[in-house]
Image (cartoon, rainbow, N blue to C red; front, side):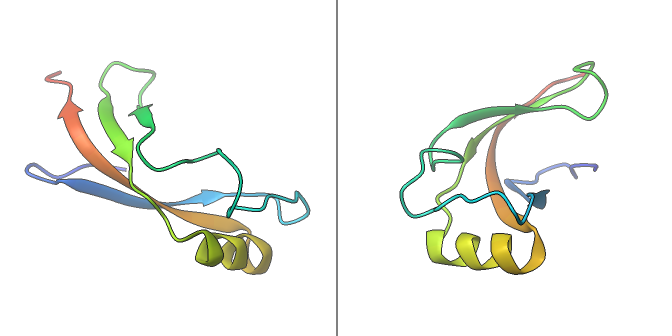
Length: 81
């Protein structure tokens, strides 16, 4: 994944095992406001961001039906490498 210059948000799908039971309405996993660091090259470059609040009902549906959850991350900082 490549983040274009000036991007404020990253959107992607996080694969999840459909058989694993997670109730996204009550879990603290992937909670909005959590700090995350993403890297696609072993942390030679990285992105620091905050998880944006997702709709838990939609996450439950997408997880059970398609095996992924939608994730939105607000970019705070990109490394300069």
